[in-house]
Length: 160
Image (cartoon, rainbow, N blue to C red):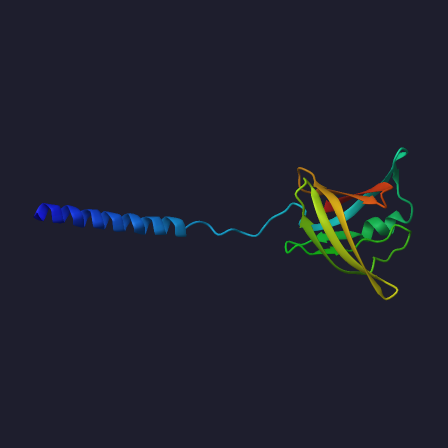
């Protein structure tokens, strides 16, 4: 009988140790870190092109010096964005940007972009789906947007 009690006690101790080890094992899993995405960062505009089917890709008009030297897009980790691009019509002042957000869509490299601008005192919200492609080095970004269902706009950026 004493031998049986010793075996039961040993099984109880072994069971308690196993439960304790499983609690320690499961509680030591690493915490999930922040969501990372290759588009996060500050991007400086280097070139832009329009694609007019069937004519092909053509450079945009306007003042490229102002547009390329001062235009930035900032994608933040909290899924907000800042648009510091200059218009392509030859002006050297950025758009009157108010706020923006980005969201990754299911399709590869596709994002929903929500931005609000101010013009003549009125606010204009814009929602578009953009294709954002970061190259293998992580230092070049290509943004493709469709404009008025008539042509595509390509913008090429480098990471700052």
